[in-house]
Image 1 (tube, rainbow, N blue to C red):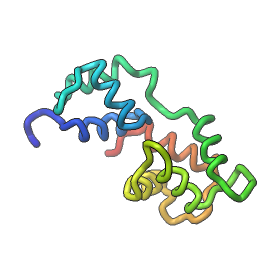
Image 2 (image 1 turned 180 degrees about the horizontal axis):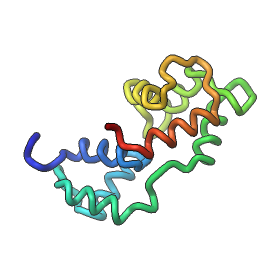
Image 3 (image 1 turned 180 degrees about the vertical axis):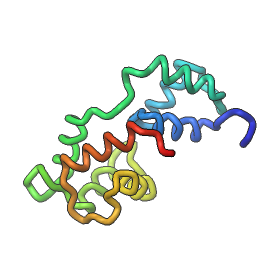
Image 4 (image 1 turned 90 degrees about the vertical axis):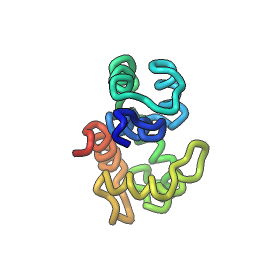
Length: 134
């Protein structure tokens, strides 16, 4: 908006780009504790949120691998179909939308794969959230 601030939703997306793998509610809580519960945030407030909450950044790869294995219906625990992954990520609680699911697969370079190797997918997810897009 060229005002030097980001809306709450833009701030949540920015924090995700900076490596925070948390739900909207969890990210909103980080923002509220660090900068206050506001409709807009200045860049300096977002940087302060990064600095104060560095311990919760990143991906817990063991939990992610376990979650993907739970979603898998082939019984192997090492592969997951695109449909099983979609059902797991878009069908529960603070779920992803279909567009977010497609964006995740795109970021991980897995948008055309029907069967996904879970270990490889976890590595791709970790790499894509650890590096801000250019």
